[in-house]
Length: 121
Image (cartoon, rainbow, N blue to C red; front, side, top):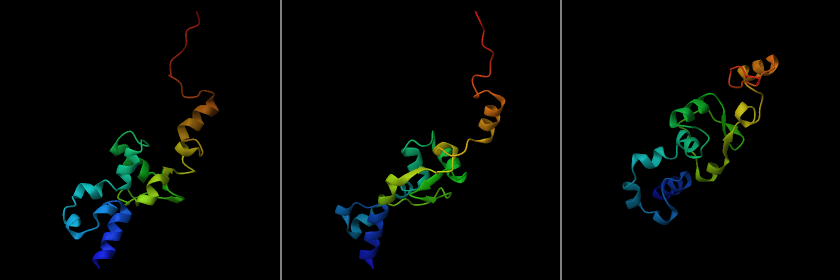
């Protein structure tokens, strides 16, 4: 039983492979598990401006892990999946269809610039 627990903790990235002893498991902190959440990983990878922005992006279905769309901020990211976190293919951030406001501005003829008038001198 303890061997399975150790392997699982190593696989999710909470425990280092060189520290596979029960004594090290007892010294784990809550922060070690919180670091493995998708919300934290999206922020650390720079896909979001803040931890709150990361949560919003995940809930609005803009984030995928490998090919799977994930909308649960508390999703625990495994070590082998960490490098496969990216924007969803159908998301405006990931090269998908533009958002409602962007489409409206493109149809109107502007690209959503500064909103002010330019002076001709």
